[in-house]
Image 1 (tube, helix red, strand yellow):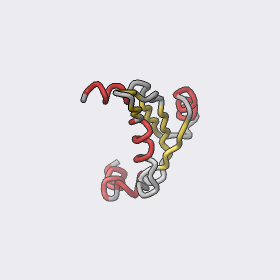
Image 2 (image 1 turned 45 degrees about the vertical axis):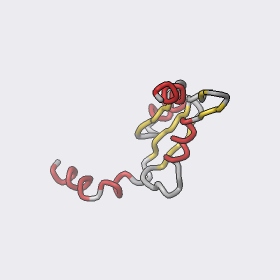
Image 3 (image 1 turned 60 degrees about the vertical axis):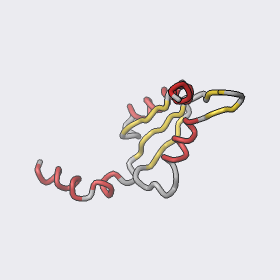
Image 4 (image 1 turned 30 degrees about the vertical axis):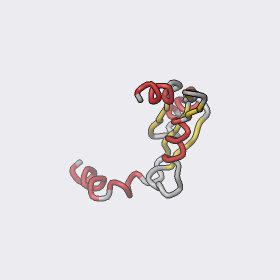
Amino acid sequence: MTFSYLYGFLDPDGKVRDLPVGLVIEDTGATVGGRDFFYGELVATSLTDPLQETVAWVLLHDREAALAEFGDNNLVAVLVVPAGYSASIVRAR
């Protein structure tokens, strides 16, 4: 048990590299003052940037597909950006 803990602790980035993590962008965007904002797309772009080589992001079209892949052990985790994400950021400003 102790050695398995130390194994991950000594090189945490190396141990999670290429783990498949699902990413679902449900964000529908927001319009304020005639301008459209799509912060969910910004999240997807920054996470899946080729320079960010921490995990293997798997883009999925909907939450159900992501949960199915997760249930089949094809993903270790799923990140869902909810539909009102951009609207909540715009309201907070």
